[in-house]
Each structure stands twice: as C-alpha cells, then as structure tokens.
Length: 212
Image 1 (spheres, rainbow, N blue to C red):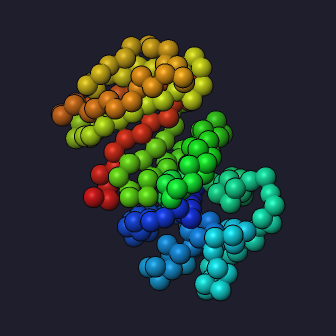
Image 2 (image 1 turned 135 degrees about the vertical axis):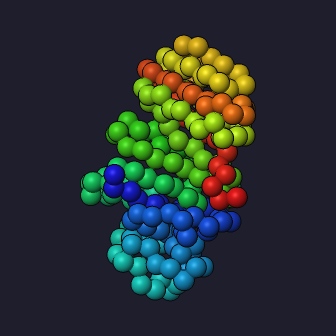
C-alpha cells in the first residue's frame, strides 16, 4: 500500500485529520491553507493558484504550478500524477462542500475512476462527519460496533447489490442508478452489517466517527 492524502480548497474544513493521517500529503491550491493553520507543510503543492495567494506559500516539499487553462481539475491532476508514481490508496479532504457542487460531483467521479483503476479511496466531508467510498465486485463487512446511517447508490446500470444485517435488507437486487432506493439505511446494534456488490461500481456513504 502506497498512500496519499489529498487536501482540496473547499472550506470551512476541520483539520483534525492532519494530526491522525499518515502518507504522502498533497495540497491542491487553497487546500494549502489547512496546513498553514497548523504550522505544517505538505509534501507536494499542486495548483493554478486561482484560489491561493502565492505570497502565502512558504516551504512545501515540492510545488507543481499548473496552467489555469487545462482539462483537469487540480485534484484530478494530482491524482494522475500520484498514480504515475505508484500510489494506490487515497484519502481526500476539503473536496466536498464550499458551495461548488460541480467540484463535489467531479470528486465523486474521481472515486469511481480510482476504483476502476484498482485503487482504494475515501472522500470525507468537510466536517469529518461522513465518508464516501466505492465498492466494485466485492464484499464489505462492517464491524458489529458500527452505528448510524448508511446509503448506497449505483454508479452504473446492472449493479447487483445485497445488504445483510442492516435495518433494510436487499438480496441480489439490481439497483438502478436512476432510483435512490439505497438512501438512509441503518446499522443494527451488535451485528456485522455486510454489503456485497457485483457488476459495477457502488457509491457508499456512511457516518464517520473517527474524528468525533
């Protein structure tokens, strides 16, 4: 496992993850300010500096300056750069919210892109209360002490989903990407909930208790 932690420009952002996460830290444009707030520096700063004042930059490990006229978002450029370096595990922070719904959709698309590349990736909300990840042709077992809400959304057609030991169960169900049937399921106290998926990508959204 070769892990990267990517921090985007969406704010306000709780920075507690910077004390707990490990790996290769990457700031995308204004995401650099999350590091500055704690007196830290990322291993890599990537951006076209449309949201970050370059005068604030101190001493990141490496800087890649992008042309603002480009096909990739700063985050997607960073992802492709890291893939070329052999990274296969990603955590994303500061990449949801902040009033830019188009960037939220773009970053969820990156989760799907990475899953099809065989990588593992998690995308956290700015308040660190929820996490998003993608399952593909696999079974996920959640510990018996897991709690809260859990939602699943097919990302393509013909995604077959089974959910067991959850409040609402499914068995080999063809979950349509056009119907939100999988929203707001719940973990059951003392039971290991499971999700099994085949045929494509399934977006999972669950409560995150690690930073509470």
